[in-house]
Length: 137
Image (tube, rainbow, N blue to C red; front, side):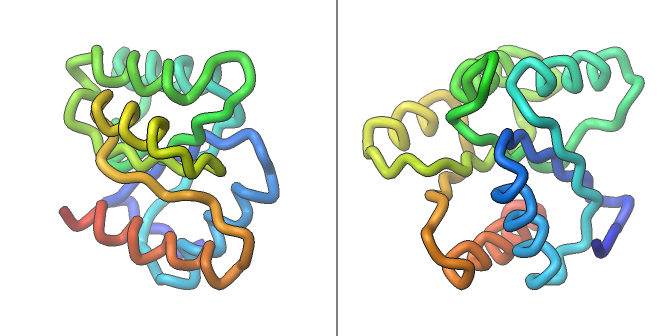
């Protein structure tokens, strides 16, 4: 993985295959970042608690699956946006849902962008440039 300490990306994803595809999209797009992965909503909140206690740096981008075990991605997003430390952190929702109601709800909760998990590798690789764009914004 191409690692640049200037950009920290947190991926909250419970599916190891999808996490590998995200990492591949980042590599293919030559996005310079350090990628950290947590596997469920509760672990994400634990990560955020450590950031708030200044034990970890704040991510530049959080990629968040909506369908997570233990605590939904939507609830994680709500808690993120209620924290002064994460209020302005970029959040990209990555989900299999193509429901316009899901998209609208998370955008109203403060997500910065929405990416529906596609069925082909080529389509999944389109995520890389989207990540680069969010990191540069």
